[in-house]
Image (cartoon, rainbow, N blue to C red):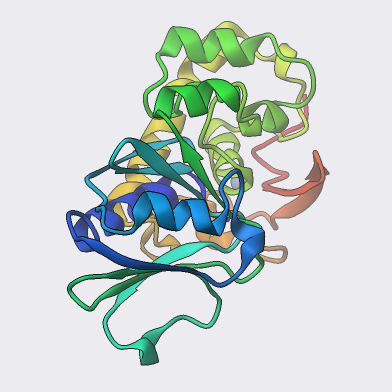
Length: 261
Ligand SMILES: [Zn+2]
């Protein structure tokens, strides 16, 4: 599932391909991916305009067009693809932007869990969705304040988009792996100094993932993510990785160096 690093790569991809090109046609292939905007309204707002800039907040990608912003959320399987010949159209093309230059940008979403919304401003969208600050921009003080006092498990706290936006199931596992913390540890049991350290560790992990283009195969050998499967071994101490359920999601951890407190 696309989390902050994957969405940041999508933002850069949009910038490198589709920015500043007049939009000639908008084709909605699956109505289900439309959130607060109808296909007709989308066409009305986009045709003849262009994407003039982009930004990201947490797992949301914003592309400005004229007086508003198109907001992409990628769900479990969403991605962008830019191509010229329709032979290259992705199999699960859900929304297609066709540009005056003959190229197309597809929002491809196999499981149709992603959503396209329209926002008057980035700030209003963040406020309406009650999203916390972006995980890469949040200050240490704010991070500690927002997560330190939470009830429930530490992994759930990290994944709560209302607290901090951008970290999901995969990257929360990596953060806890590198912090030597069991994912089912109560958030309130961690000292302030641990949360302070976690702020830096989380940002280092997210930055490193972006530097490696969010390609797990290119991640450092010390990372959990490329080995995040049952039966795999901890890259630090060789123990067999284990899986537990946290907030309905599968958490992977090393039973040897992430002891339950
Ligand atoms: Zn280990």
